[in-house]
Image 1: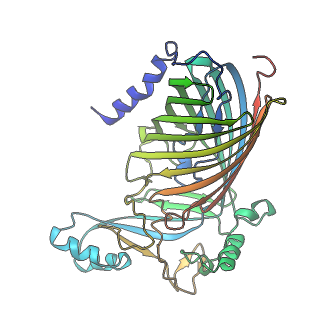
Image 2: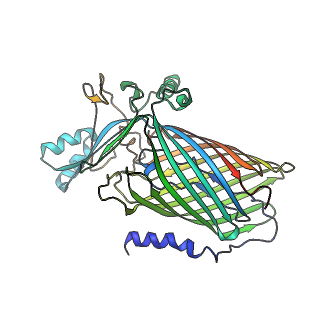
Image 3: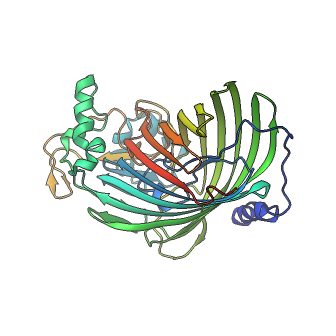
Length: 433
């Protein structure tokens, strides 16, 4: 079956169940009464902002209500220019020899044997900001709709607001802990904010400093598959359908997917409980193209995403308030070829990399020093991502305020590097239930 047709069927399936799905519940009061919704726990990557990005949501499916959530995030997206070389029809007789070479020596080898290659070049810098306005429509056991409008702004990092995510602070921290940046950030000038990408066919994306633009309009629908309560615990399994419509011409492709989420909540005392949750998401980055001249920013259409959440909830029952604290790990598949969890470049197969050195020009500035990067820039080109987010929040019957701080693992990627988010949800149905 055609992949696009299959994904359309998977996406339409939840809507066919909208008025028939009831879920399975026990009659006694649930220890899980309020939905969990985190919007700022996806990496703010220069590629990812153009595609579908599902929030972390777990529904209680116990009431009909309406909420508005406003979220702001910012992330450092510095990554020095790199060019990836994809050899065409690499003869098997040369494959072992190629992969024995250090990855930066391979482009010269491809040229020496006159092997045709296709190339992609990527460079990024600055503070990428996003503002998301969400409308959450809960329909009890029939599910929940979430509509997200995403907007973005690229800034240089000189503002005091951006200092926590700035190149300067990041390098101060690297120096203080005695572990300098893998990508040689100090070799390059700071705050040359841009996103620049060119694909194999010469199509390109260019976002300059100060540029603001619309991202996507996302629709997410979640419905319960199974819910079980007892006096001290709660289990649930839910499914979701997701679709994102592009609102700009940078990457005019409709993307979407399906997800499944499991939650286990354990009540420890009357005022304390713990959450363990696992979410899996399968997305297709090109369900429909709205423009034939589209820059190819991904080597794969199907991508996997997984989130693991460990949370702690502290209640004030008399006030109806909850303070929560948690850690959320977010894994995302590569946009480009390769999925190497390694601190070196040795395991990248069948491709070559070149990057800038002394005497080369980057964003109008001549680089004076070469840097031998131990992980090199394929990571910044978003091979894959594992990012850990600290989540802190306070929930009342009127609303939900949260702060998130995210950091990528050192051997994975560098764009985004550090990321911050803040959000507030307004319960439009309060006090009526």
